[in-house]
Image (tube, rainbow, N blue to C red; front, side):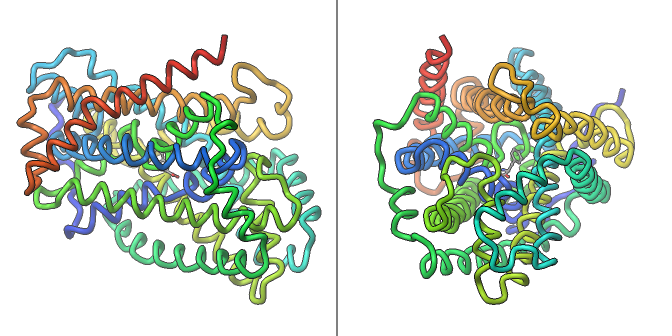
Length: 454
Ligand code: PHE
């Protein structure tokens, strides 16, 4: 077997290339679909504060750590970890970090494409004007009926998988940066439009209070774990996606400012999504704890009422679809890059394998909303289990060990040279948080959540 080399993959073009691509990976269904729905399920305010703390204290430092590992390794996470084991004389068990990430990537991708399929279906539904002036009951029934049809869900899941794989096939560098440049401002613009609608027509004050007035009595240990897990999910951390993109990063880009920029963009989109959705929830007697359908039962109501809603609504779902697509690409890339590097498989073949496995797995999620909706075990349906295991267990574990590796096992010189911070004070702050604060927080949250399942 040939030793994989760094030169097998390309590099981002400009200094901005990496930031754009990683932002494309981070901003996706996590911010727009998942954040509002889990915030609603977990009581709002206090949950949001814990989530923001996790993003700042755990997400940002670990993102910097993942980027530097990737940039040094210049390969897929699996081979990057193998390189660190070899060159830095680490215990071979660290290779597991790459493997667990690869498996987590498959699991996430399998349900991600199903939900992104819902978004596609809704893009088409919006263009038909189906929701013009419709009541929230009608919108909710439409969505429930949609979920009842496994063949429709399977169709959209398949279509989204094919499109995603088709792009990865051509190599990630091309087109990706340009897509993000256009997508992000457009997405932000449309989100602001919906927030504007929510301010005028929705119960904005109630929505705002729901999101930002904390009631810590409502917060369970499990909710804290969900907030922590979501910080990893939404920032694409803990499974190697950011490490993978870091592999294509040149030396002149500042890792720290990249990590902060990406996190800020992702958090802004999440908060805007919440501010768009909750006022609509309260103005239309919908339940904040509606679950995974929250996005799909709130926004059609709003677009159905606003002038030009058919156009803006279709455009909105189209943009969400693009955002999901940019994230899905980053879920696929680590596995594909590894197959190309180490197994001598051609890129198209590797794409077909990854897409095929994830497509098959995704059928479990498709059926979780209809045929198998009563088949519950562990944390619920097949979808519930995939979501819980990846977001609340595998990603935090991946992040935990990434922090340990960079904070405790690799020479301090390594991270010092990679970060190249002008001010030594900020290096010390970062190192302290990565070494002590982030792993301790993940550990404590894990322990207290496990205590719940007695
Ligand atoms: N961060 C992406 C989102 O919020 C999902 C994702 C998770 C992508 C993990 C890559 C890795 O939609």
